[in-house]
Image (tube, rainbow, N blue to C red; front, side):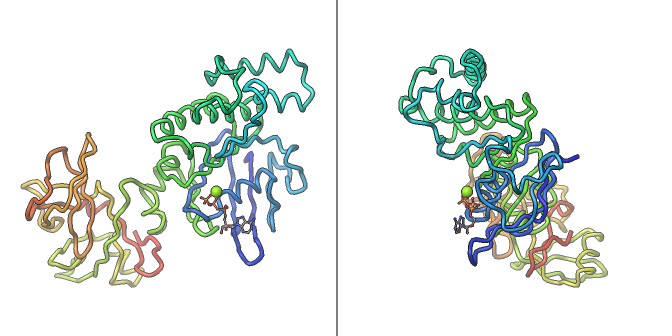
Length: 365
Ligand SMILES: Nc1ncnc2c1ncn2[C@@H]1O[C@H](COP(=O)(O)OP(=O)(O)OP(=O)(O)O)[C@@H](O)[C@H]1O
Ligand SMILES: [Mg+2]
């Protein structure tokens, strides 16, 4: 049985429909990441789960019990906010123990739990400090500790790492995930950062304008995005979209990108275009779908381009090249391409590239 269930959950603020008919089944212990651009309804959805925002219609259930009429404090969920929301006049120890004190737990038991959580988060040395005497990362740990100490059924996170610098963010995302795996607590994590979504999630929910676009594991979503929005939103460097026209040639099919860039398609991919009845397509290309061609590579999958720019990433390099009228990114070995290189030969992985409907953006194959 799913731990947390959302059934056609909607939210309207006057004329604004912030969340549209969201269905989601979260398994016990799962780490779910809600991701999407600013304003897509992530926080609203999370706040409805927490009970901080009323739902306009639909139902939210925990362990099969409807939460619709349950007050936030009775939902057995703990939320961590982007701005930490610590009590400024209390010490770290008091901040950590506050929720337990409100539940009338005995002072000795509170102290024991505070020390246990402080050890887990390496806050031992900071217990007597006030929040203003802490760094951003330390404050975020206290906020995390306040959620952990309550031992809730569900953790809710709303962009908890957004105020930290890039290096700390990478460290903290691993720590949060390690703690969550160790505790096995069902978690819903909101972020606009697709890298956080990819690296942390068991399953990702991609939202756009209040609507679920796709729900799946990071690998599912990366490899088989249901539309060009998901394809371009998830992945780094981002997927390039290039329009191409299908042209028949001796019973085979060719994608004409323009500028003499013609690529031969495998038969099963051609059939998908025939079934959809489209000649014009939007081709989604990830950097790893384009590489430097080797001498023996078939002409049908190769094109030539000058090298506009090279970004070194250490383990590999990303070369910006031209395919048809668009710039695309190619993944090459470090040092294999240089800015200003003329007429280099590149190869497309024709089995892996994504084909999207030119108007709806829906995945064709
Ligand atoms: N109290 C409110 N009254 C009216 N509209 C609201 C209210 N709260 C949110 N909205 C609108 O609902 C939509 C979703 O907002 P929400 O805060 O959930 O987005 P988000 O995905 O969390 O964005 P961000 O990444 O910027 O935090 C937005 O269009 C927002 O303007
Ligand atoms: Mg938000």
